[in-house]
Length: 276
Image 1 (cartoon, rainbow, N blue to C red):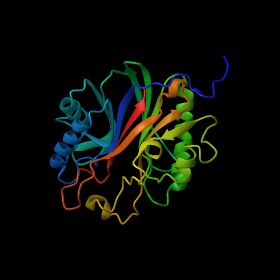
Image 2 (tube, rainbow, N blue to C red):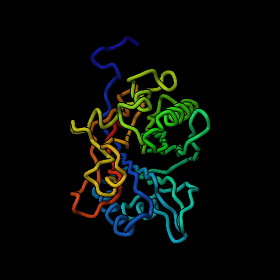
Image 3 (cartoon, rainbow, N blue to C red):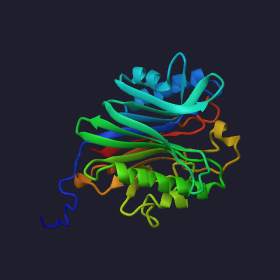
Image 4 (cartoon, rainbow, N blue to C red):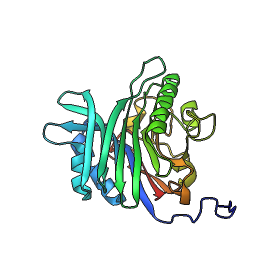
């Protein structure tokens, strides 16, 4: 087969899937009101896959199940072990399509320190498998070295468990900006975390041209931390794929409200449409 410079990926796929990632801040604060607002926002977005970081499970319900019911999506799961007063914090997944397998693994720095996790799942989408990874990395501003170790561990997990013929989507709360060493090694701006593994950053390609902060001092729930404005939350998709699968064509923030209104979380969500 000869290379066609006008169609380097072959005919480009025009259909898309819609992925949302959102750190939803557990059951803190006025969580019932926040939950209702989160559900309404997600229903309006009409996603195919929803990835919930700092999601929750309680004896009476799980957040992914509540979201799935509101959105009319048939498949959901929760995985976590961080015990709170009467609930557990973890990672949630809601999907239009069946989840055929999943595993939650801890992510640590190179020296074994730090807090983080990745939920890896295979979603049996209607146009082929989607290899999905939902990530939570350590949070302190001075923890870049830890996060770099976590990203290298994540990259190794992805490399050993995925196939290049299918889309690979990595999303979640990285607690680091796009110019950080930990993100640069994933997005082709520095040596990759593992050879041959590079991702599109959906906001960089298909956002509105603004910084796209998901941790913003315009949000009173975030402002109390006295952190700088940062884009902490990402939808990343592996490059290259035949037909341009995974290429972002649209990306927006969710849950961005005026400061004088009740906030839905301390983070804003990210919605991305990816070729699929």
